[in-house]
Amino acid sequence: MLKRYFVLMLSLVLSWAVHSQEVDQTHPYTMMKQVATQAFARLKNEQTKIHQDPQYLKQIVEEELMPYVNAKYAALKLLGPNLRGAKHDDVEAFITAFRAYLVTNYAQVLTQYTDQTIQFGPESEVPDDRRITSVKLNIVDTPRPDIHLQFQLRKEKSGEWKAYDMIAEGVSLLSSKRSEWSSKIRREGIASVAKDLQHLADQPIHFESKSK
Image (tube, rainbow, N blue to C red):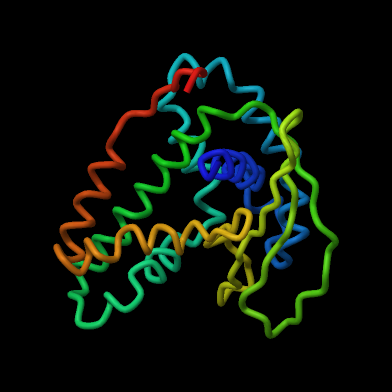
Protein backbone atom coordinates (compact mmCIF):
# COMPACT_ATOMS: atom_id res chain seq x y z
CA MET A 1 0.00 0.00 0.00
CA LEU A 2 2.83 2.44 0.83
CA LYS A 3 4.17 1.99 -2.70
CA ARG A 4 0.78 3.00 -4.07
CA TYR A 5 0.77 6.13 -1.92
CA PHE A 6 4.24 6.98 -3.21
CA VAL A 7 3.20 6.41 -6.82
CA LEU A 8 0.25 8.73 -6.47
CA MET A 9 2.27 11.27 -4.52
CA LEU A 10 4.75 11.54 -7.36
CA SER A 11 1.94 12.01 -9.84
CA LEU A 12 0.77 14.92 -7.75
CA VAL A 13 4.17 16.44 -7.08
CA LEU A 14 4.85 16.45 -10.81
CA SER A 15 1.78 18.66 -11.07
CA TRP A 16 4.01 21.51 -9.91
CA ALA A 17 5.93 21.24 -13.17
CA VAL A 18 5.73 24.43 -15.14
CA HIS A 19 8.25 27.20 -15.73
CA SER A 20 8.99 29.04 -12.49
CA GLN A 21 8.22 32.46 -13.95
CA GLU A 22 4.62 31.34 -14.51
CA VAL A 23 4.10 30.11 -10.95
CA ASP A 24 3.42 32.15 -7.83
CA GLN A 25 5.56 30.31 -5.29
CA THR A 26 4.89 32.92 -2.61
CA HIS A 27 1.80 30.97 -1.56
CA PRO A 28 1.88 27.17 -1.36
CA TYR A 29 -1.79 26.61 -2.22
CA THR A 30 -1.74 28.99 -5.16
CA MET A 31 1.43 27.38 -6.49
CA MET A 32 0.00 23.89 -6.45
CA LYS A 33 -3.31 24.84 -8.00
CA GLN A 34 -1.72 26.95 -10.75
CA VAL A 35 0.48 24.23 -12.14
CA ALA A 36 -1.59 21.07 -11.65
CA THR A 37 -3.49 21.04 -14.95
CA GLN A 38 -0.51 21.94 -17.15
CA ALA A 39 1.88 19.45 -15.57
CA PHE A 40 -0.53 16.53 -15.69
CA ALA A 41 -1.16 17.39 -19.32
CA ARG A 42 2.56 17.23 -20.13
CA LEU A 43 3.07 13.87 -18.47
CA LYS A 44 -0.02 12.47 -20.16
CA ASN A 45 0.90 13.84 -23.59
CA GLU A 46 4.45 12.49 -23.50
CA GLN A 47 3.59 8.89 -22.66
CA THR A 48 4.65 7.67 -26.13
CA LYS A 49 8.12 9.17 -25.77
CA ILE A 50 8.39 7.92 -22.19
CA HIS A 51 7.57 4.35 -23.22
CA GLN A 52 10.08 4.54 -26.06
CA ASP A 53 12.79 5.82 -23.72
CA PRO A 54 12.04 5.39 -19.99
CA GLN A 55 15.23 7.31 -19.11
CA TYR A 56 13.45 10.41 -20.38
CA LEU A 57 11.53 10.43 -17.11
CA LYS A 58 14.73 11.51 -15.33
CA GLN A 59 14.87 14.57 -17.56
CA ILE A 60 11.22 15.35 -16.82
CA VAL A 61 11.85 15.05 -13.09
CA GLU A 62 14.95 17.27 -13.30
CA GLU A 63 13.19 19.94 -15.30
CA GLU A 64 9.75 19.86 -13.75
CA LEU A 65 9.93 18.48 -10.22
CA MET A 66 13.27 19.22 -8.61
CA PRO A 67 13.03 23.04 -8.89
CA TYR A 68 10.12 22.80 -6.44
CA VAL A 69 11.73 20.38 -3.99
CA ASN A 70 14.24 21.38 -1.30
CA ALA A 71 16.37 18.25 -1.52
CA LYS A 72 19.17 19.74 0.61
CA TYR A 73 16.85 20.52 3.51
CA ALA A 74 15.32 17.05 3.27
CA ALA A 75 18.77 15.41 3.22
CA LEU A 76 19.91 17.33 6.30
CA LYS A 77 16.74 16.44 8.19
CA LEU A 78 17.27 12.82 7.21
CA LEU A 79 20.82 12.86 8.61
CA GLY A 80 19.59 14.46 11.83
CA PRO A 81 21.86 13.68 14.81
CA ASN A 82 24.36 12.03 12.46
CA LEU A 83 25.45 15.53 11.42
CA ARG A 84 27.30 15.97 14.71
CA GLY A 85 31.00 15.72 14.04
CA ALA A 86 30.47 14.77 10.41
CA LYS A 87 32.98 15.92 7.79
CA HIS A 88 31.73 18.71 5.55
CA ASP A 89 32.78 16.86 2.38
CA ASP A 90 30.91 13.73 3.49
CA VAL A 91 27.74 15.73 4.13
CA GLU A 92 27.99 17.46 0.76
CA ALA A 93 28.48 14.08 -0.95
CA PHE A 94 25.41 12.75 0.86
CA ILE A 95 23.27 15.72 -0.21
CA THR A 96 24.37 15.32 -3.84
CA ALA A 97 23.77 11.56 -3.83
CA PHE A 98 20.43 11.92 -2.04
CA ARG A 99 19.22 14.40 -4.64
CA ALA A 100 20.29 12.09 -7.47
CA TYR A 101 18.57 9.21 -5.67
CA LEU A 102 15.34 11.23 -5.49
CA VAL A 103 15.47 11.93 -9.22
CA THR A 104 15.85 8.24 -10.09
CA ASN A 105 13.35 7.10 -7.48
CA TYR A 106 10.74 9.62 -8.61
CA ALA A 107 11.34 8.75 -12.27
CA GLN A 108 10.92 5.03 -11.57
CA VAL A 109 7.69 5.60 -9.66
CA LEU A 110 6.33 7.71 -12.51
CA THR A 111 6.46 4.71 -14.85
CA GLN A 112 3.22 3.74 -13.06
CA TYR A 113 1.41 7.00 -13.84
CA THR A 114 -2.13 6.31 -15.12
CA ASP A 115 -3.77 9.74 -15.29
CA GLN A 116 -4.88 10.10 -11.67
CA THR A 117 -6.66 13.28 -10.58
CA ILE A 118 -6.47 15.40 -7.42
CA GLN A 119 -8.80 17.26 -5.09
CA PHE A 120 -7.33 20.00 -2.90
CA GLY A 121 -8.39 20.57 0.66
CA PRO A 122 -9.76 23.97 1.70
CA GLU A 123 -7.28 26.84 1.41
CA SER A 124 -6.20 28.49 4.64
CA GLU A 125 -4.30 31.66 5.44
CA VAL A 126 -0.54 31.33 5.92
CA PRO A 127 0.92 34.03 8.22
CA ASP A 128 3.88 35.92 6.78
CA ASP A 129 6.14 34.79 9.62
CA ARG A 130 5.39 31.08 9.16
CA ARG A 131 8.26 29.05 7.69
CA ILE A 132 6.64 25.60 7.63
CA THR A 133 3.16 24.72 6.42
CA SER A 134 1.23 21.81 4.94
CA VAL A 135 -1.25 21.29 2.15
CA LYS A 136 -3.88 18.59 2.36
CA LEU A 137 -5.45 16.88 -0.63
CA ASN A 138 -6.96 13.67 -1.93
CA ILE A 139 -5.79 11.55 -4.85
CA VAL A 140 -8.70 10.16 -6.85
CA ASP A 141 -7.66 6.81 -8.29
CA THR A 142 -10.99 5.32 -9.37
CA PRO A 143 -12.11 2.62 -8.78
CA ARG A 144 -9.75 2.40 -5.80
CA PRO A 145 -10.43 4.36 -2.58
CA ASP A 146 -9.16 7.95 -2.41
CA ILE A 147 -5.73 8.48 -0.88
CA HIS A 148 -5.39 11.20 1.76
CA LEU A 149 -2.08 13.08 1.55
CA GLN A 150 -0.44 15.99 3.29
CA PHE A 151 2.56 17.83 1.82
CA GLN A 152 5.07 19.55 4.06
CA LEU A 153 6.51 22.77 2.62
CA ARG A 154 9.17 25.17 3.82
CA LYS A 155 9.45 28.88 3.05
CA GLU A 156 12.83 29.87 1.64
CA LYS A 157 14.64 33.13 2.44
CA SER A 158 13.55 34.29 -1.02
CA GLY A 159 9.93 33.98 0.08
CA GLU A 160 9.29 31.00 -2.19
CA TRP A 161 7.85 27.74 -0.92
CA LYS A 162 9.34 24.32 -1.65
CA ALA A 163 8.31 20.81 -0.66
CA TYR A 164 10.48 18.61 1.52
CA ASP A 165 8.22 15.80 2.76
CA MET A 166 4.91 14.03 2.20
CA ILE A 167 2.70 12.27 4.73
CA ALA A 168 0.53 9.46 3.36
CA GLU A 169 -2.14 8.11 5.70
CA GLY A 170 -0.07 9.33 8.66
CA VAL A 171 3.28 7.99 7.42
CA SER A 172 6.06 10.48 6.66
CA LEU A 173 8.26 9.38 3.78
CA LEU A 174 11.20 11.36 5.17
CA SER A 175 10.84 9.80 8.62
CA SER A 176 10.55 6.31 7.16
CA LYS A 177 13.76 6.78 5.15
CA ARG A 178 15.54 8.17 8.22
CA SER A 179 14.56 5.06 10.17
CA GLU A 180 15.68 2.85 7.29
CA TRP A 181 19.13 4.43 6.87
CA SER A 182 20.08 5.75 10.33
CA SER A 183 21.58 2.53 11.65
CA LYS A 184 23.65 2.05 8.49
CA ILE A 185 24.91 5.62 8.70
CA ARG A 186 26.02 5.08 12.29
CA ARG A 187 27.60 1.75 11.42
CA GLU A 188 29.30 2.56 8.11
CA GLY A 189 29.41 6.34 8.00
CA ILE A 190 27.83 9.06 5.87
CA ALA A 191 30.31 8.69 2.99
CA SER A 192 29.58 4.97 2.64
CA VAL A 193 25.82 5.50 2.53
CA ALA A 194 26.31 8.32 0.02
CA LYS A 195 28.08 5.85 -2.28
CA ASP A 196 25.18 3.40 -1.90
CA LEU A 197 22.70 6.14 -2.75
CA GLN A 198 24.69 7.16 -5.82
CA HIS A 199 24.73 3.54 -6.98
CA LEU A 200 20.94 3.43 -6.66
CA ALA A 201 20.70 6.77 -8.48
CA ASP A 202 22.69 5.40 -11.42
CA GLN A 203 20.23 2.56 -12.04
CA PRO A 204 18.27 2.70 -15.33
CA ILE A 205 14.54 3.36 -15.37
CA HIS A 206 12.36 0.42 -16.44
CA PHE A 207 8.68 -0.39 -16.69
CA GLU A 208 7.53 -3.01 -14.24
CA SER A 209 5.14 -5.82 -15.07
CA LYS A 210 1.52 -4.79 -14.47
CA SER A 211 0.95 -8.13 -12.78
CA LYS A 212 3.16 -7.12 -9.85
